[in-house]
Image: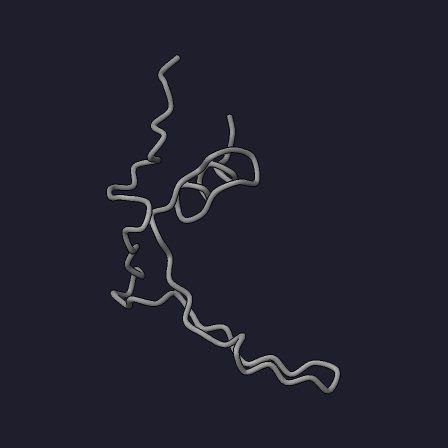
Length: 74
């Protein structure tokens, strides 16, 4: 059995940005939070995806971690 590529085909350092398929730098935006009478403007902001690192179950960040945790297992 071949050893799995720990980089999951992603090139770059863990903090390398991953471009949106449409060429955008940002993957989305977290809106301001209005909940039960509370207003939290500081929660708003852009979402940026990084190449990341997978360090174990439920530990890591970025594309490499997402693929390691959620890849279809045969």
